[in-house]
Length: 231
Ligand SMILES: *Cc1c(COP(=O)(O)O)cnc(C)c1O
Image 1: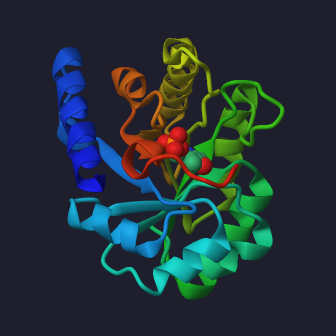
Image 2: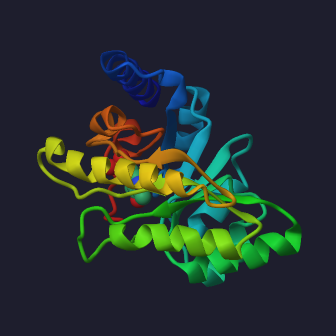
Image 3: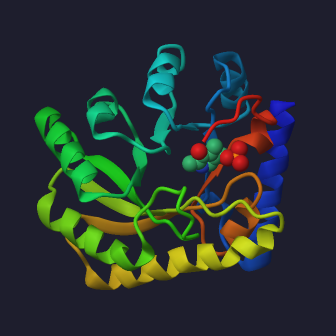
């Protein structure tokens, strides 16, 4: 099941890339594995997944003991007091939305002399329940992180779009994220390389790719529905 789901997703990614003239190699699939048990995650890894995303520090740490040779992405809301648990191994933190959090990552990263790659999470839907910096405050946040951090490297932007019955309706949110990325690029901020757009989930990853996603975060379409309600 899982292997088939992954090959189906890859096929669709190839097709949509062909349609819009993009190279499928520039797209990374992050398998989002919250609530998914280790044996299922291993199935996905055997089927060619190399990037794993979790949204809770505790769960990530538990799973990490039994899973090797993957790149760990942190995609959920990160509390400053939890940064220290992931800073020595995390591959990419997708969800930085405050200077305070960035400064904590900086402090912890400096201590162990490790560069940490992050994305800035932007709330493109305007929903109050969503994390992320407001679009109009994103450039200022990037500027401040760039000025104050040496060990934190901004690699792009991330968004969790609204969940809408018609995925077509989320397109404007993806466009907004891409526009912001292009605006930020023009400033040439120090330690900022606007390489990635992390956008698109099971419901809307093809549209996200049409709009420029370089990272798609997929859970349900790989592992099936989660039985617990998780944020
Ligand atoms: C759960 C989650 C996903 C994956 O969602 P699916 O709809 O199951 O593909 C992606 N990004 C974040 C931040 C998540 O929490």
